[in-house]
Length: 335
Image (cartoon, rainbow, N blue to C red):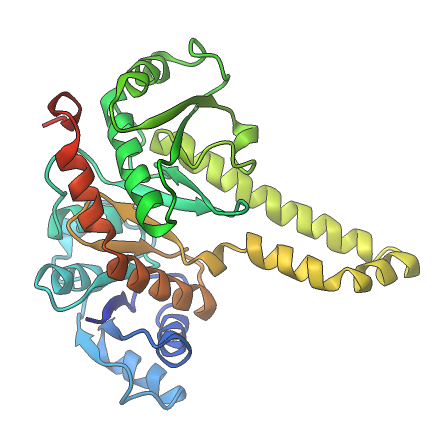
């Protein structure tokens, strides 16, 4: 089944979204169906001579980038809603959107519903660590949570790491202000107690902000407020570091020569840390695969998001999460 791509969501929709869809189809062999207003989508497809390669599903409404969760109720026929409906009816394997994160989360919960036992879905991102990525969740779906929800996020993250990254018995870390069990607020302290006693989870203890890219653990669990701040801080730091590096390399002839000699390694590092290369975040806990691309995604990022969505659907991440939650002790299922 194809990936349902919300063609009207994102800062550069629909032109860059359509360009990314065409790239995913031609370069990666991913089947994609565009969801949105037919006329502008046909015009964008004609630019790439791809009118016969990428089908279109009509959706006249769209969520604006500044619209929040309530927009999912005001616009029941929006492009993201129609895309989710295709997955629910079994006509698409996954949803991809670069639109409003709050709108995507709310629409996904409304249209696809949470998996049995899932209190709230969580946004999951793969941090570019070596040799394999580190999973971070929640990255922004739930600003306020209960300790029990962090335990459930750990199960979601563990299932994702096992399926998508092929990590056996992933180590779980709890993000807080100190490595000692007593460090943190009431939420973190109680979550630490629950995670330590939770069967089926390989809990490694607390981690701090400087451990985000050191791969101390395989899965990092936190609330959506903290996770989003940590993620945005890291992205900003990477941009700042590369800007400083470019300025330093251009300061003198010797520096430029050194930069040319290390050009291949610098390009490789830049690509590894580029968010668009990784395809975006994944909304875990729903009855369907949902990938949230960066709002400013260009064609490359949209294409990567489609590839990621198709791969996750093929790997059966949703099924694996259901199996893990079903086998969890009843005291930890939270329903």
